[in-house]
Length: 341
Image 1 (cartoon, one colour):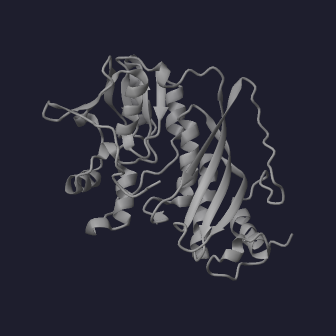
Image 2: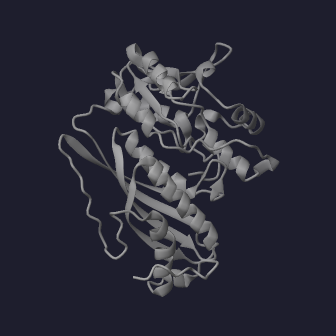
Image 3: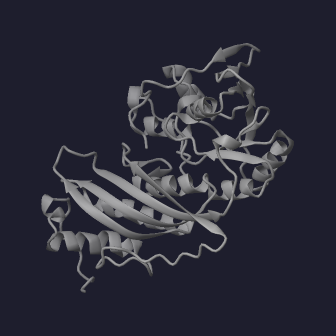
């Protein structure tokens, strides 16, 4: 196979998805070039995964990614797709290992942009310790896509008999947030310069694997989730509905970046409903909660904090305000922002 050729086209055409020479060259010169590893073979239809499940369980997760703009402060759709898939496995208690990738590319896309995104994806795979082992490419007609859509499936392994999930949550448990709330959603909005606003805020998009591995080593861990679309308030509602207990947030304890606060106040948004892409909301036995926070601080996550608790009965989500009052946080119904992940 000759991989020394270079793509001479500057933009994606429908011919790049017809299964012929141009499609082969696109795969070889963009995807295989940057994502190459010892398991990725673009000449086969399936990958063999060398998994050792001795004393462990296999976990699999799937996700889709669309974002505008495709490149934003702190990341791009390529790194976002890897981080998002890795994080879904990580908060489930697994160590992510392998990913598959489906790329849906719109006719007319700048190939240089696609190349940058796939390079970013490759770097993120190395940083997260995962490999893309199989994939597929489709080209959409102009106007039928948002430039690039990615769909991923991730495979990981976790210890057998790990008790972690909504069913493990008990009244009195503490809610721990690993960092500031709402950074990703706000950064995307600022990158679009919506409402005449702009800023220097970076997305929090990152792997949460160091966070989850630290928490898994802490006694009393009940549950973990990464608060993407809908933010931490939406996860709180999920907990309340599953357990029939209430969630109480402490407004003064929730870390929020000053730029996020400013944008939220100006436009009437609530950071608790805005997406994060590199945070963990965990539920933990209150006996071990402060030790867990200190462990994250020692790892460099200085904004980690206990931000609330689980209370018996009623299945409400409410927040204790800075002035000492309370208000109920309603479940999200309308999409507060254009799609951001």
